[in-house]
Image (cartoon, rainbow, N blue to C red; front, top):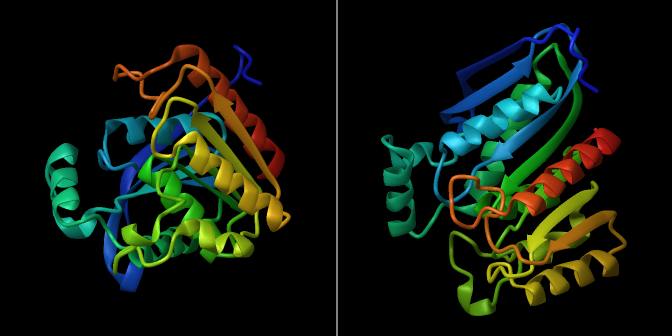
Length: 250
């Protein structure tokens, strides 16, 4: 709990990590100053790209006592304004699930090499980043907690599978080895309330530890204060749910 007499300090910078296939990619790191050890969180960005909102969110996690790392999942597509890079990604049919899992594995290894990280590491993602966080947590057994904010396409129809996304993330649910927090808007269409129901049923069937919260009056991206879909009351409550969940599990 913050007190006004407390000293606060933070370091935030762009770093280079070894991602999928040992490719060197850039990432944004923010951490509290001090010896630690601190728990850590990997932030997986959304389809709008590796943008300013994710820089701010990374620093927000550091402010709350986490070593936070946001890898540039679109590094291999090229560089430029985040929205321009995201257009290229969309035109290319997205990025591969295997590549994302490889980049997250590299981010985990990077964080665990830092002397001020406790070894407890969670994943956080919104939109496509929520999907990627769930996918990576199911495939990487060393993840300690996951926060999925309205991750679409966790539930996928057979017709939507392709070489880049060959398996629906929900089909990996049996392998999930850590607690999950899910935040969803009831007015969303990806994921729709029906898809969230299917996801929850799979978690129950496999005996997983999870918390799902569904917000009336909120649609997709209700955390994004710079967009019309922002919902203040729901977003404030959602962030509080995140801090409580991570404090418990990391």
